[in-house]
Image 1 (cartoon, rainbow, N blue to C red):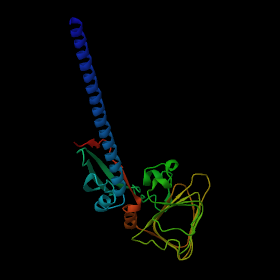
Image 2 (image 1 turned 180 degrees about the horizontal axis):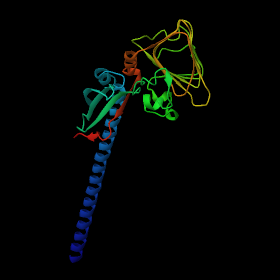
Image 3 (image 1 turned 30 degrees about the vertical axis):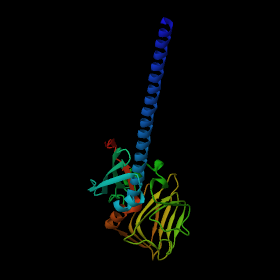
Length: 278
């Protein structure tokens, strides 16, 4: 009998240990599932925030909410219009995204700003400055490329140009009266010419900012035919040869319109403003 009692005690201990171990394993997997679900939810929220920010770069709040709508996520956006120290148009967004199933939430602040960060100074108008890209775009010429602009046409010539507001031309560019028929004083363009000559043929009218850049020791030429014109201004980072027979009309209001245009807009998260909003 004593032996049976000992066996019974041992079996009960083993059973208890087995149950305890099973419960511990179940608790581990339960906690692990909760952790993984939480991480997955956070990744989903952060990705949605990026999508919303991308839409806000070029769309109104209403359109951004519609184009990024996800059934199981809720998004709220607070907007503040700001002005930079030099009159730059800025927009501050506070974006909160919450997950409907687990009530997790994440908030980040974003700033929309112009890639044309500053307008040319009086001394840069119709002239050259080896720091002009740093002034205009806050980028050294060595780190500036077509990809810096969210919406740009990158070309190696100026024939059959598609409608756009930002053109990045590498090489010579000859513009005729039909090349930029889509643009006007209310729809100006940014035209960047890299290592090339620019020619405006008869009856060709450019409204906007022309930036002529050289990354070599070669000298390039700007030629404006007698019946052609530039309204806005042109600048360069090195001396250029000018053959100006047409009209050059400086226009700060037109450059301000260009600066505020959607194709030149950029958006960035404001450092230190992202947090779990539980």
